[in-house]
Length: 305
Image 1 (spheres, rainbow, N blue to C red):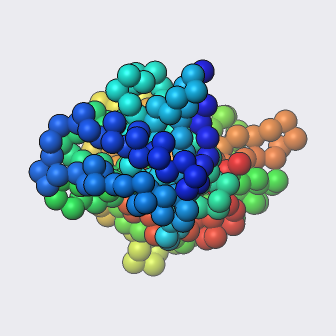
Image 2: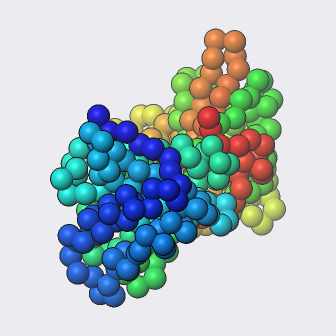
C-alpha cells in the first residue's frame, strides 16, 4: 500500500533521493533540466517555505513533489516517481493529494511546468485535468482550476446566478451545461441571457437544436444549443458552431462528451436538482481564459468541498 504524506524540511534528504532517482533516468533535455542540481539544502529550504508530499511504499520513499506558493494557484515542482514504482498509480495519488492540499489551503487551483520533449508526462497532466496556458520554449505551463460548488435554493437563485455569470462573459466563451431533466438548465440560461443583454425570450432550443440571440448592447450574441438529440461530436460539428465561437458566447446543453473539442478554454457546468427542489451547480473552469478570474468571488462561492 502506498501512503502519501504531507511533509516539511525534515524530509529533505528523502525527497532529494527521489528527485535524483526519478529525474536521473529521464532523457537528456536541451536546455537541460535543473533537477539534478538540487541539494539537500535547496530542497530543505523549499520544503520549509511551502512543504511538499512524499509517497511511501513498504516503508520506502518512491515519489515526491515540492509545493511552491505565490499568487492564487499552488505550484507543484519536482514531481517525480522512481522507475520501480511507476505504472502503479503513485503519480496519480500525488496529484490527487496535491489537489486536496490546494483546496485545504484556500488556493483556486494548481500550476506546474512540464517539458514538451516528454509527451507521456504532458499526457499524464492533461488526463488529470491540467490545461496548457502558455509556453516558454520547450516548457509548457499547465494549470488546473479547482471546481466550485453552489447551492441554489430556488429557481430565482438559479436565474440570478446565470445573470451574474453572464456579466463576466465575453465573445468566444464556451459553456457546456449538463443536468437532469428539470434541473434548471433553461432557467440558468435565461439569467445568462439577461446578464449578457441579448434579445429574448431564451427558451429551450430542443426542437431547433440551436438558436441565436443577438445582443441588444453591442456585446456578443448568445448561441444556445441543445445537444440532447445529437449522437456524437461529428453531428455537433455539422452545425458549424465554430464559425460563431469567436463572436458569440456559446452555451451547449447536454454537451458533455460532445462539445469539449469546440474550445480548450471553457466552463463545464453541472446542475443537480434534489427532491426538495434545491439545486446544486458545479462549475469547472478549463484553460487560461479563467486563470485570472476569481469565479468564487464573482459569483458567490468558493472551491468545492
